[in-house]
Length: 358
Image (cartoon, rainbow, N blue to C red):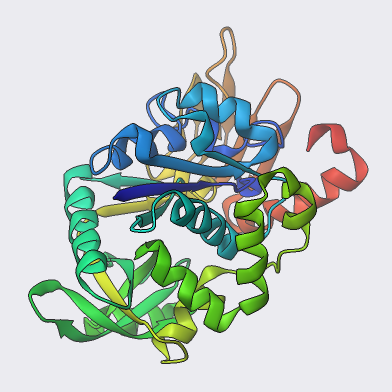
């Protein structure tokens, strides 16, 4: 049967102080009052029923996830005791589902994006499921048709088209996040898609590649699936690495028995990784300022102002441009948009000097 696994374990530190240890970004009502996790779930149930949706998240957030997604059975909520990167967020549910259903086919998706139209996303998932079900040894990755030379995403280079699936291609190469000149060349060539970090595979095929490429992790993951009561002990020993580095890239280079196929996503793809990307999904005023509350400006342009939605709260800006201003009940952040990528480092300083605010 088909399943969807939603990866929702990130801390979202680049959205601090909105996103905190107790309230990660995927649970915040960022998009028209809906959380990114809820939006991911609504996309998932376009292709599978709710009882075949699983969520991998941080163990401290299990109760909040259960409240946010009451349709998902409790046994389908997998709480990681600590973050061990995306390989384990893929391998653990694959082992769990393979034990339940030897024929399980999994769509592994993320909860960091706003994706429109949802119908096009669902159609691409359907095609990816069909390819994974019909082929013997294939891992399917989803690639977003690029709309700009974005430097914040990895890329994949398309190879030969797949027979009987005109929207699918063999993957020739995966590419790391490029500089602007390289990204522009990628987009101009027409050969590259953004790497969505979403996948479809048979659980058995994925686990077979894991056994060939990371045999120690494979043995530990099977042990974890067989003995969930040992979760804290076993999870702590898992190798911390990404699924791209450990599985997808070596398989694409012919280092294991499977091959990698890409299916295109003809969608508007907005990864809500920080305040700049969050601003892209909120409507600006005539001066380019983005806010979700009560804001008054004079000679101020292209600012991002969040946290002004509280009752009786006003934020006023005078003579400033390109700022990020985020106000919460206990923390106020002010920075220039050019320094937004350094917020993660700032959170590290806060955690060391004032951990109660991190």
